[in-house]
Length: 344
Image (cartoon, rainbow, N blue to C red):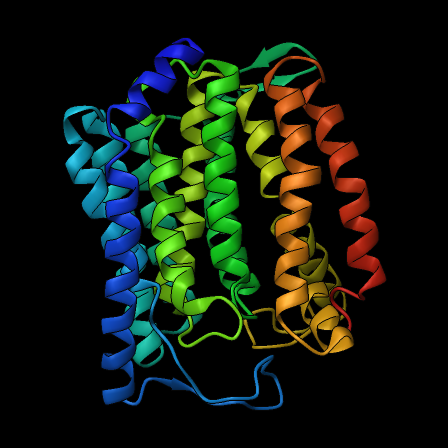
């Protein structure tokens, strides 16, 4: 599919993006009222990054707005994509919603996450891997790695949703960036080109309420859903064109590097990785700068001015995927270490 065809596909449905953003904003406001009435409030404690009691669960608005938009796009979206994202995304959101209202043991959450990941892979297929210009089919191992990847992206998104606006801004910019990547690369799957833009629109509506200072938090239902959808988009793109996986990994670099470095350091110290903590680099940076907004804006700037250009260079064929990923990640690793990711 050519870049012009991608542009035409999106322009024919452009009205849906502001509609999804408005729906998301309205629903977030209604969910805030619901959370207050049901006392679904995150109260500050020694492991919190906020100091004011704040309602949670607003991410459900992103879920409803995106999936509603997906159903509107059903005439232009493949049945496999709709089935994969609708069922898999709903499953993760429901588990997160229940966990927001009470508590689900980690082992049962993981079981649900792997089940939803397997469902998505069944419908979209397992991508091949492109290394130094060579395309490699990993077979059954590839399917296992893809499932682990989806579950990791899902959970790291949850881990990184710890300060006002950061998860919403990441979804907005990565979703918009993915759409630009499809245009540059001439995404050959017409049915999937609008999905990242649709998710970005849903995140934008939520950010009306969540941008620092947040009036409502996303909650596990929203963060897990966003992580799963972005991971699914990356694998959908890689099925059509393996090179595009590297582009998505670059776009998600801020979250991947911070969460991975933090996890590795905590594992090495023998800590329980599912316990709440404040040891991510972005959390240390927030305490150092004394506010959420500069860190959220810094994440946005890194995405737009550093990661997106490298992803575009890979998509256009000017830079090898592995080389581009390594170069893009080096400053992120330096920042993670500078802000003591994974340390108390």
